[in-house]
Length: 344
Image (cartoon, one colour):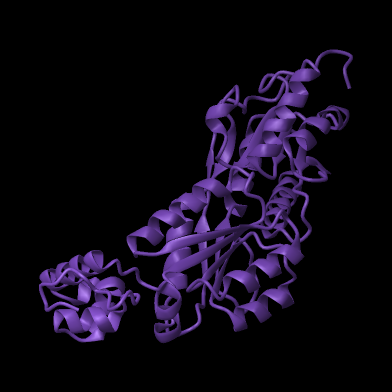
């Protein structure tokens, strides 16, 4: 090994290590480690010296070794139920941007709506990350409480007692949507339900539509869907017409888009004949007319989730954060159609 100004960190072909770099630079191994893991704790010129020596020596930080000694892996994990759902990519992007600001990588797992795959993903990722975000989890509440005791995790849009969770509260905005439809003369409504019995969002939205419709004296029909896909929404359009509904509130924008397509195939115009409101605000620019929806702030969700997951690393995350959604009326909501003479 050469002296402090030397470029080679290898001795007889040995792989460069923190100890070798430290000896070469005349600093402690802890200083070399901090240059990679916590550079803000060192003077900029010290960090630059370490990085320059590391580049010359071909040294690459071993994140797994650092995790053993510091408990930090340099990564966070995010587990989603369906990567194809337009709700998730923007959320993942926000999480990734926030992680990069903290010098962290993001590991992603898609469970395809299968609880067993979700639990397996938690087991696999938990050893590779500093914490996990479980989004719209399909696992049983008892399982989630157990996992929260075993691993550092935050639930997103799943309200389970005694866990850390961040929730999108769409209930008030959904009730406002029903009220607005009533003010426009709609008396018969249909709610297109999401497919998952353990979906906290679906139970919240379904209850909000049901309670507000009852309070306003509106007739409500709830239609289940098998998978919550565009095709499911398309397929139930005829049942919406049979029910005599003049307005539809859908669990999410995908179902709303699907029912719009199905209604169009039946010669039914939106919003002239039927008004439609979705939820999540992820498809407004791709529908015609532009979709009215319940808008959620996914960046705020990511910020709250990451803050809860990473602040105070010595303790398990805790607490319950509610983020309110808002009603956005666009081109798919209009006055209730007039009843033609002789029609039902």
